[in-house]
Length: 246
Ligand SMILES: [Zn+2]
Image (cartoon, rainbow, N blue to C red; front, side):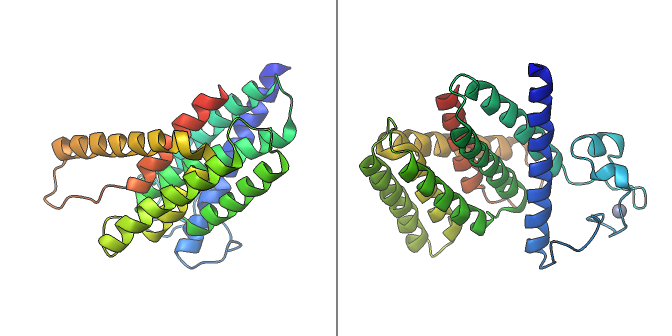
């Protein structure tokens, strides 16, 4: 029975990731959500129905049947990671059996993974996702105040972290970081509180530094890609968040 529940959460998680990515990708292109079946990113040919199944579709039909291009990897990575994250969060919620907490934790891990993957691939963070996330987290914490992090610590964390990015944003005139990073900073600060957000940010910058060194060694082209700092911060937040749950 437990294995079926786990499988259910895995499938539900990957479907959620798939739907969210399709939504953001279409919003980014200025298309409507209800535009019909997904098209190949390269030749715009209509993809076969099988390829729409999360994870499996990519394994069964990795290339577009028309132009033979491999589809982008990000959807596969996001579907797989969100599926695994959902199983993990669900499994560790069995003890407390609190469905409200479970739902919020699922939303948070999903958003952190999507932000990471989206920023790594598109060098951009879906801004409205962060705003929705911030509101969700705020409501949840106000409704469930019995937490090991005080509201004051969360507020100080959010303001300090957002301020830290706002300062860099102003200083670099938006070249180092985007405005969405300020929202991401506010969200992470509120989620972790003042004590932990310092560690989350430090780990995020550490990951970004390692990432840029790896990129430097592996880079073939002359033009360096900008480091997706928001993606690394989000990844750091995900690691800390999962670590807290488990
Ligand atoms: Zn194609």
